[in-house]
Image (cartoon, rainbow, N blue to C red):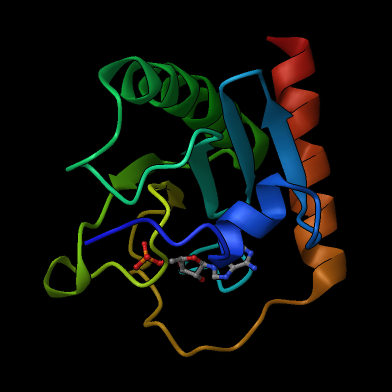
Length: 141
Ligand code: AMP
């Protein structure tokens, strides 16, 4: 399976499509998931093209892992979450829908199951507020 340079996340990385950005380095980008499975659901991805776990360069995966920890701590603080779920899917059979490697960071609250994938977009104002809350938690870290 090859990498499609016009997948939606590649276009976000190139700035061709918008996102609610949380955090960025030379190697990674983190932004809000627009169809969150829980309040504060965000995504961390390498900027370098990689389809998934099978072709990502180990250095890029390491940068993603570092950022996942940073974002998980900030999201827990921002939403006073009881826990965080980290998920990453590979190929269609593995649950992957967008074919640029990404890791889900999902705040969790006691007694609240993950919402199903409805395909419905969250209110952009809520996403903007949530991104701001995580950015503030990062600044305070
Ligand atoms: P998966 O490939 O199964 O890990 O899922 C892709 C994820 O990307 C889903 O959680 C979608 O809600 C999310 N998503 C799809 N398009 C966008 C977008 N334009 N901005 C932010 N998140 C997106």
